[in-house]
Length: 421
Image (cartoon, rainbow, N blue to C red; front, top):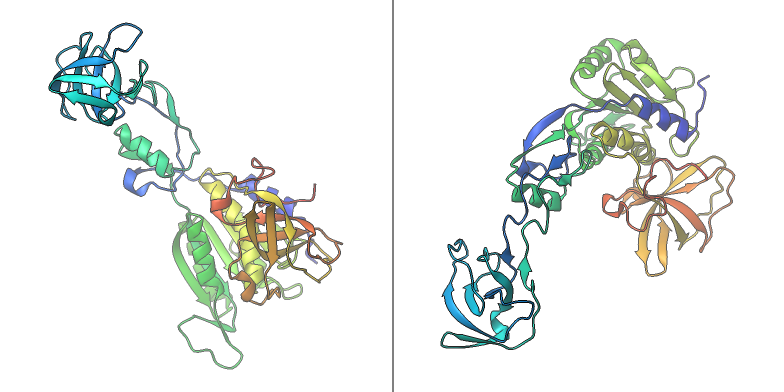
């Protein structure tokens, strides 16, 4: 009989063996969402020289006090660098982002002055440095711009572009293969015969893995369980991909098809059977640098298992933290089932002015798809807990990436590792 382990034990085994993927250079325009492989430092000041922050007039230095009248001596184009220095009482027309001439003390916005001929009269009191951007004010030469392990978001892309960095070293995307083991399941484009069902797990897993940054290189619904067919395919995939996600074939008494297939292919089992619902019959293994995760064939259990086991592996492979936010929320509807074992309930979480609230979604049977619609959280119910009632405070796992770090109680130990405190 295969022994059960806790969720934390299973996740520890995965994290201990998950390899960090190698590095590749990518163009900046395709780098969004990737994970930086090295620290990046500023090779120059940003901005490189003093600049105007508004359209207006640069005012020449005249001591600590700014005068109220200046003589207009010229105008600078946006791409022009002055060959002269402003003297006290002189002004020159400048544009937003334009380089200021030497001797500039401040800039007055064009709508804040009165221009008569070449005489500028200020209509407001300004102080030295106003409406200017100093050289190196944003970043200084030698300063760290981005750190290794940082996710390249649009702000990071803009910063790299500003420094002329057009290629960046990132961890390559995990290559993922998906196998659906089920003699009664057929591809979605096939009309099922009596006793058959369409395979919904493979497309779902592909979508989830792509959302986590993976490259899907193989998807196959396996309708035959013959070892002579499956073993060569599995052996080939173990040489070509970083992660194989298999669904189905996880329980048949002591004859566990998925586990037998793994061991016959030379995969070292890391764990099998996890004390959670739904989907306690599942496991994982590794052969050399390829990870294998085997999930339940029931769609909802398959989805829960993916979030708890596959997501941490995919994120760890590229240097991201595998943990997501865990927050406390109040139930806005009941869940009547008692938790005899640790249970993860599909739900929808919302942030309100009064804090997090969570709604249990309908269709909580492991075989049902309804609870996966609009699901962005899992309620973590410890074993032995009574049914949930309206207003009950629960610990939830936020699955939506946009929530990462938002009002999290433990932002450094985010989602996935969800043991009771």
